[in-house]
Length: 79
Image (cartoon, rainbow, N blue to C red):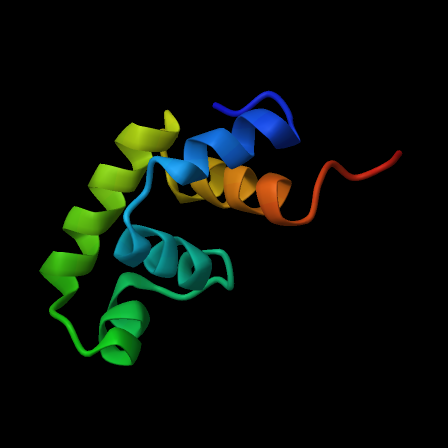
């Protein structure tokens, strides 16, 4: 899992453009079915993209993948 913004950005660079598109929609809270509908692909294809991007990001689930995406795009939150 990404440890900081720079690490998260590097991990996102490993994704294909489609995987990044799926991850962006995932980060909005969209379900696999909603992503499939929006991208006009099958839900099974979305799930394959998710498996691939989880592996590339070192994420175990959608929460961790979304955290990496937001960390790279927004940066760490100040406390």
